Length: 574
Image 1 (cartoon, rainbow, N blue to C red):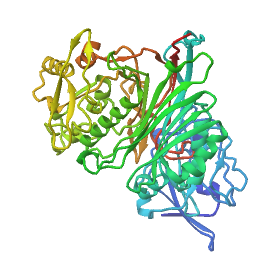
Image 2: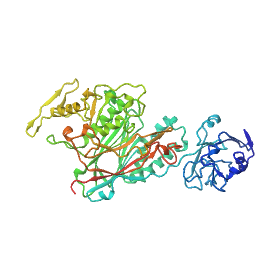
Image 3: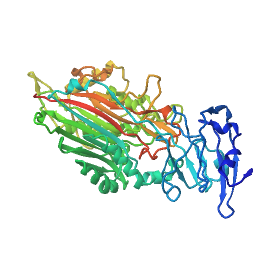
Image 4: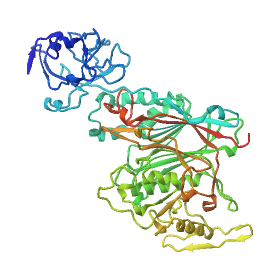
């Protein structure tokens, strides 16, 4: 270990040669770990890694580091990157430079830095990634990538829907990360700056992310109950929102919240949906959801212009795809029950448009995801760990059962609740009923529905009808999940891993999916009005942009990114 005098210039001279002082090490992996003894006012330093192949000339700019603090920084002078690594850039420290070391503003607007107390030994520091740095006061400096501002992608021309017969609105879905869960799983955030993990910091960043977009509907997951009551509800009410909230069962601290602008929307009906049912094995977890039915507050709208918003947070466990599928089956049944527009038994049921959003804890194009889009899944073909797509298929896991997931007396395999006894005539042709005996209760199913279901199963060569789920909602995803280079979008970045587990789905009157499950209205005998249009989406970051990013940080208050979409609802009687 080499020893230097307490002089910044001499310290820097020990790092590079005289000629290299006029160079920018924009991505040089050169870290100086130092120990500083205030009593002796002496400093020791060591170069433990240097890559001089990355040295690039940048002119005559030199570094000026305040001698009083004896700080050494790594910044980046490159115009093409937001990653801060090189020590050779002029720095302008802010006021309260060292008394309050939470924020340091530099003369470059895109530079930001923070320091924190060390939590690891010197030996561990030597093995850390290149974005860690130890300053002279025994504090550790974290260098974060500053992500660019997200932009909108226009899906359809908004001018096309700006006529008086359309109602446009924006919707946010956002997992805000419960503080209790963050602290209970601190190992997931070991590389985050502890200052930005504090709720008193995070809450301001989160609320700013929400209100800056002026959304008409805001769906939050992992909203902690006390934070909802004391902060989210109060702050968002100042911006014209009213809200609904459901806490997870089993003494869990968080739940789902839904906020809506009272000057834009009228709440017609709602349903708080706890998934826990102690008598059913696959519904023994404490996840929840909520369903709300809204109508636009305009002089042109009528009672027929309602639409549904449903938000949920499914079980996380990657190995228990069977539970996630059962939770989704039950949630779709609750959505079905609240938003059937016309339950006249003599006509086909008609549904209001639906927006389904939340944290589904599954990957795009996984069996669980495809079930929402296709309206069909034969689940006994999969292992439990394969349903959500979060685990590679070669890991050990049990297969899903060949019988029904949820008892048919509780939720039917078409994701609807059992109907009451009905004997109806359609075009003077009377249909009979089939009574299925069950030790708990009788289930009445119309014979015509059974015929349609069996025909559908035969058409798809399904060996075991009881291992099939279907639904009649024609969902599409707001986001595309990959760019043209096949790089995935990211909705959550946790412990160095990027995930795409949050989604916004919406229904259309015609399905773009090539699937027999919802190919014709003749099979399902339901109609979903083609009245909801996606106008635009707020772009997500891609996986290759998130190197040297640790969430939450100064820029983002959660480990999930906010999802945002703009829709147009066609009014019926204009």
